[in-house]
Amino acid sequence: MKKPRVLVLRTAGTNCDLETASAFKMAGGDPELLHVRDLLKGKAKLFDFGIVAIPGGFSYGDDVGAGRIFANEIRGQLRELKGFIRSGRPVIGICNGFQVLVKAGILPQTPSGEQVASLTFNDSARFEARWVRLRINLQSGSLFVKGLPEMIELPVAHGEGKFVVKSPKVLEMLKKTRSILMQYVNEEGKFAGYPHNPNGSLFNIAAVTNPEGNCLGLMPHPERYVTRWHHPNWTRQTFCKEGVGLELFRNAVNHALN
Image 1 (tube, rainbow, N blue to C red):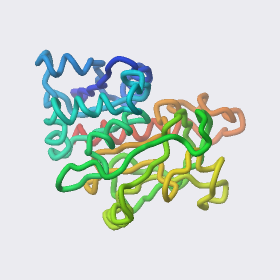
Image 2: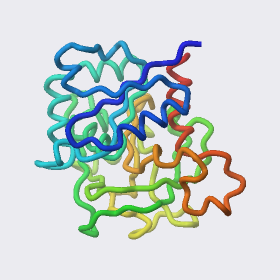
Image 3: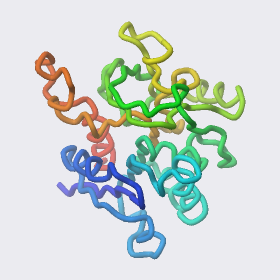
């Protein structure tokens, strides 16, 4: 069976591309690391791939805001990404990649393509790098969380992860379309403030999708939990055969195969 090609889109400052490519390879995909300039120069075509991933890091040094310059490139010169998403193919933006999708006006999805949300500085005014607990909205229907449990753990590592929206109407739209995929929770699965919510995100939002569920943006790093040994408590979690993050990538690969 032919493996689906996975485009891991990188640029200056991207630093989680190898881990993301490795996760997709473990999940059965055929990943290829490609600089955005190669796409813009026509050295490769977006629709030659079955999946697109925008990995974490600090694209262009987050010089004018996290993900802003990369987002402007996509909005102005890589407009076919929206058509790629409309085709139903999986797209995932992790951490800085989530910031890129939001600031490009791709997530949350609106008819006009207007940017209606942002990811800004953590309330703690510090870089937060640790494990968090997440509750998945299993009613969302997103292809990425098929077969996952309602409660999972993933690591975060960001300084600008606070999800905010332009108006209360945007939050209501996200709720109505079941586009809120993951939320930060405490050990009991309930909403809680810092440190359980590491950045102060509105409504404890950690991940959002488009209404169709094939485009995902999330602040936690699933590529950093693809083996059981990645978890700091792995010696006691004898029931885990692999990291839960791997399942997100496997779901994308399986969807691309169908």
